[in-house]
Image 1 (cartoon, rainbow, N blue to C red):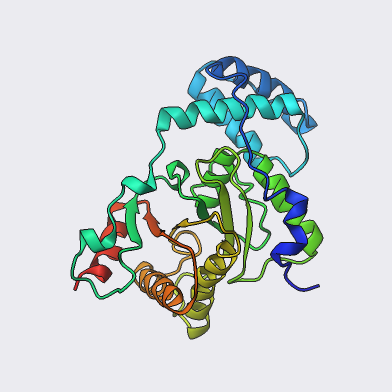
Image 2 (image 1 turned 45 degrees about the horizontal axis):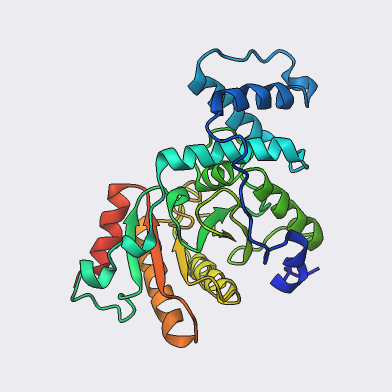
Length: 299
């Protein structure tokens, strides 16, 4: 079976329906965490000897770890409502970053060589706080999120902030597709508890440590950006897209080369395709990565 197109899974994950997170249990975080830990620890015999810590932060970390490791299977409505309320409380504490208030690259670097720079934004921060219409997740070929508790990858961060509904949607898509996601392809789901309404999931190339970057790997990374733009362009309400630095984390793609590919591919795609995009955000997490992108934009 070939890679699944949007029209084959969109209705199954209710993509066109706006998700409204529950606020019913808002500002009752500690109570919610205690209740959810009790439920999740009883799900498996493997957790019978797990001791619940007394400290709030440690309890919250345990809850995140359990959800990270939990397979994609339905949770009850009340449990999801409590998780929604917890995640919305935490989002309020972190704060939402508004795309419309960020400077464009054209403002930042007025004499850059990219003709689409009035649509480009370079932003350093946590992508799960960004209110772009869609954010891009650097997924793996299984497309179900990262099952390793607390793993420092963007896949883990996005699934943790969105909630378990995101993994359920991914499971629905992959069960229907019946094959692993190909490198350079993309899928889309709702964003659930994220400020972004949608999440684009793409699988970037893996560059093993100590190996030389190949032409094929460069093409695969460019394909990730093109696939995300093409998929987002099928949905009229997506006018802003935030890209993470795909494949530059644990997948090992050299950061400078990846940034060149990202910027040039997006610029060229926008030049060659009719689209409704207003802003494209290049999101980086570290100051070093920000400087890498900035160097490319400098004339």
